[in-house]
Length: 596
Image 1 (spheres, one colour):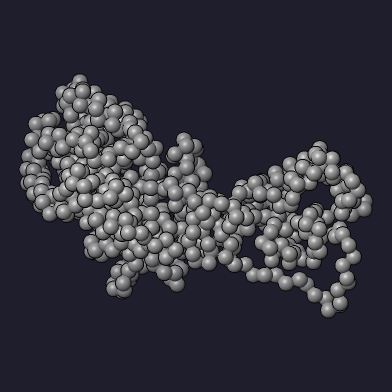
Image 2 (cartoon, rainbow, N blue to C red):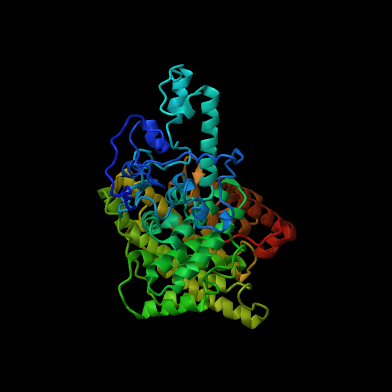
């Protein structure tokens, strides 16, 4: 923030003559001299305090009309910038407004623990964040009120005649008017501060985060830092955080959709600016794509119908052969996984064919994202990172094969003739062989039992690795259940499918840290759902549904999938045949199934 120097008229300043009666309220409450520079005086600028001036008195002969907090808001604020203020407010209201979330703290002020001078430090205290909450007072009215309640204020020592009747009711009324005005103005802002904190702490993706936990956390830290200086990334964070809050707490999602549309507009401006680094474009693209995946069928995915500008820049970026950052490489890999997620069950996919081909040609090399400089990894984190890197690569390759399986369903290709079916059977045999090869080549860590891992590793490292190995194994066995369903063989007749279901149950109920404090990990959602709809036994279906209910995650809609698995299984038992998953969901629940 640029420091504003006091105005100078060239005339020697008059010496200070005692109490200040015309300065800002902050200086007067501190009983210090104020230079009356507007909108922010020098003292408040230097001490990073909020600077507020009393509204000017009306001129003689003018009617005095009390102003409500709503009247203090300039007209047409809906059309103003993110901070919600118009030009007409630049005198009195400019000193009361919250700093813009994209310009605040240029001299190293912290916003929700994130320094704007380039360092990332997540904290919870207000010591480093004077603007942590809109409940902060501008002036020390609370102290005045407490003093009045102790009958110490009415002593004739006030420094302003207007504060003479300092009775508790008067001070309370002023406090209400001031804090209400502040809060009304605050809701006009883009809530970047709480959104970044929520984004870092709570935003996860069930298809990615459980299998790549360290890189997911580091991605959020780096993206949050980029959002401090890039408007498109900042708006993407705010829209995504608002959507997650709405899903988690069952709130209306209209605000999230509005922020998403605004973020898309800013994203288009970013894309059109050829001077912007394409890495930043890919980060903003990823945030909006995560929104598309969660708010399924309510948006048209950004990359399913990409603009020509994006395709042109992506091709140029790929052909440049410049070294890409680990963050961008990871984002591309995650987008490919999400594409697989969104074509299962009859979904139309996240990526267009052109985008998918360009992303696939980037290769499968995935270096880990570096830890923040101010948060160096300890030894246990380094060991965990080293041991889990090949496990995520196993999971990534598994998801690429899973996408091929999804393309064999009748949702994506013809299955109406014997020739079609024969072709599918042949391709499935080849895919099944590749799955076995992938399993045979899994890393040494995945070959260990949970007891072996506990015996050789400290609990801090062993416990999360055991959980990851269990989820990766469950995801592998789930593909054989899916193959049996896609081939259309009679339910429960496929030997590989039955064997896969047996292994899955052993993992979930075994010693693989599938649960934590009674909550099942989200990585088991798809395997358990496939188990529930593929078994022709009520007791087995009940087991799977009960485990689905233990996931308790509104983002992945675990309660819905538990109900879906129960109702679909009952329909199949009544009809003694498979029932088409997507069409049953539309018929019974009135909506297409969420992505899984």
